[in-house]
Amino acid sequence: MNESSVDGTATRATARPAPAAPIDAPVVLELEGVTRHFGSGDRRVQAVDRVDLSIRRGEVVALLGPNGAGKTTTLDMLLGLTAPSSGTVRVLGVTPEQATSSGVIGAVLQTGGLLGDLTVGETVRLIASLYGAEALGRVPEVMRRADLDHLGRRRVSKCSGGEQQRVKFALAMVSDPDILVLDEPTAGMDVTARRHFWDVMRADADAGRTIVFATHYLEEAEQFARRTVVMHRGTVVADAPTALLRASLGERTVAATVPSTSTALLATLHATEGVTAVRLDGDRLSLRAADSDAVARLLLADGAHDLEIAAPTLETAFTALTEN
Image (cartoon, rainbow, N blue to C red; front, top):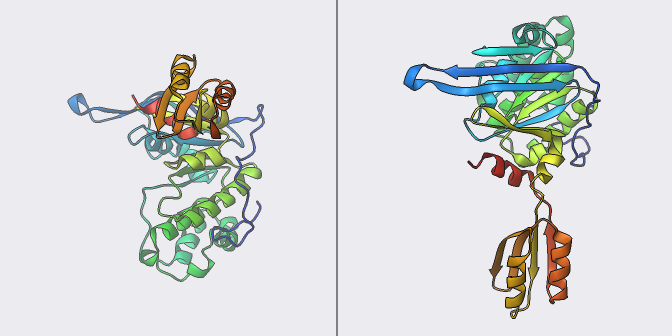
């Protein structure tokens, strides 16, 4: 693996998605007809409802969805922390429990407490010891990559939320897993620490590690994952390359400053096919258009200036998929 550091000692990487996995790469994570409910009768909650999902070796997949969408429950089933009510979950051809115990899958989770009385170094060495001598030998490298060298003697209870997330990251990496599952991994980190965490993850992805992460930060999915899966009310409502999902709405936002005498222009725009959400605020006009080039020509011909055209964002697509 390339050595980047969460603290920013490495050169900052340009924001770019991780490399795409080969289309013939083997499937390493598979969910078939998976459901999971909690409670019974009137109190029954369907957290995950008939999810089918296959992820290939080397893929980097973002799992998005509003609170209660089923993301964390799905990740818990991948890790063997909870069993599906029905359906099958396989990790590298074996059960999640077998994969977790062998160390081929690691995780950084929101839940799961650390032992506050131990130091950071003791915590990492303790977990590494569960995987044997090879993992123990990997501790210094993992501590460096998670930027924990200077925190080795600090008690975990004295670490900030972001620092504790970095401890969890180190624990996930001591077994050198083939697959890494991340549930809101940058929660509690500031902007700089979050950026450098993804620099480290990008280096791992470049080296071929499979990464699945759930996040509320849509820009993390947009900048890092080539594939995005959107969940809503326990079901998968979209599963596509991130760029394709972002562009799926088709419309672009167009804004321009227009002459004050553009009443005829407004009437023309309202009557133009593919133009929606026309709004005039003072002399600043904004709208959405399926054919932004045609609208731009129309605006410029009418004397508009300061023209701006913006492509759809992942946030726009996410909102459209989950607003109902």
